[in-house]
Image 1 (spheres, rainbow, N blue to C red):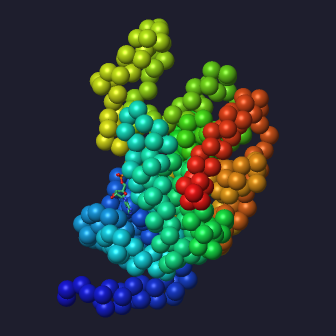
Image 2: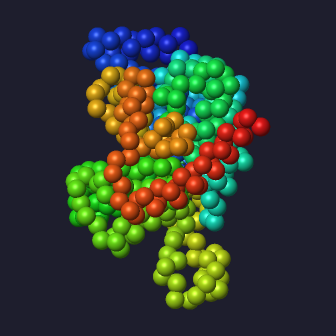
Image 3: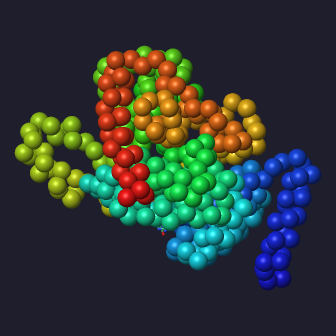
Length: 364
Ligand code: NAD
Ligand code: LMR
């Protein structure tokens, strides 16, 4: 029988009915930018999530193919594809959770802030759609620069009169995932046994791992602290391009600059984009936590970049407790050591500028 909207809808209803009988809630999730490097593996992993009943895949290119492909997976969620701006509203209507990895990624030599000019406009348009079609949805914002795109989203929602700070979350989970991996390597533990809070924001020095609060309680030498902090802060750049400046430091500043410009020196993804697979993993880990919170599970705590009163800045990443209304509780930083206090001041300085840049983009 050829698929049509009637059979698809009855299929959704049957599955919803089935879930209701089993007592399992199913959530409706949209991915905006679903055909991209992050979007595709993210869509695949969300299709595997038993908490998802309906999965909407929206992009400005290639969603028919991605939707057909993902739709053949024999898991519960019903998948629907939406292509281009005219279909944005249908993609968003009725969604419980919207995940946004839409936008351009970095190339070697770029900072995340270099993406602002293109991605700010993309995020603004998508958030205007959310304000109109699913104002109560939880929003997981991945598009860079997160330190500015989250304030942009907040301003769009304020303008539309739909802003609920609890429901807007910048995704910094990849920093935590990386921190757990690198710290576990140093401690000789399985990454699952390690929990590293990463606070601040999501760019360079604004990424502040709190190694003094690692679980299980661990101590690090000053060299280990320096190595881990820098590696976690530069994790994204490590994927975009290889970083081993320190190995060439004996050359001196002049020759080091020369080496940095050599094309064969820049490797890793070498212009083909930034982290996609580890990001899809991190995004799904975070989205799953949001859905468990929505379901009413107790004690769901993850780090995210949210509206905050923890510092004097209006947004800051810390641990938050996820519940039915989103980030229901924002946790304080806890005790910091001297190294972290210095890092915090540096992080706040850069964060303040990035936040202001996002706010001004909408208010101007
Ligand atoms: P990509 O270029 O592979 O995919 C982006 C997708 O967005 C493309 O399919 C593109 O068609 C789509 N897109 C562009 N404009 C759109 C619009 N107006 N509406 C809907 N979709 C649109 O890039 P990627 O590697 O998937 O990265 C996406 C973004 O995520 C980048 O900004 C990147 O910097 C960011 N990122 C963030 C994190 C994080 O930790 N928060 C990690 C990795 C990447
Ligand atoms: C990351 O941390 O991997 C992302 O923010 C992508 C990037 O540009 O580094």
